[in-house]
Length: 79
Image 1 (cartoon, helix red, strand yellow):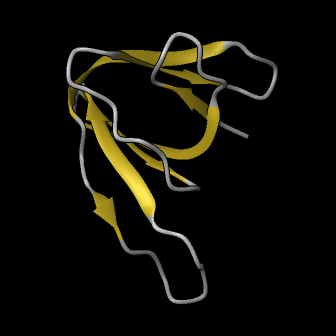
Image 2 (cartoon, rainbow, N blue to C red):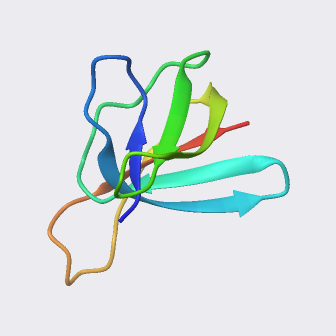
């Protein structure tokens, strides 16, 4: 279980995280407000240990997911 936090007072939310060169790509499992550039995204494991962090370059976009899922994902990149 991976969680990503993009605001200080926010609880980490489940997300898929991948590394693309020096950028982290994050796709939240549930719709979420898009973060503002300049905020920090922190990636945590199930025990709360920090796995990675980076400054958000841009807030990303909402993208549709497979038709078997009923929500859209929010994506963002952190560099």
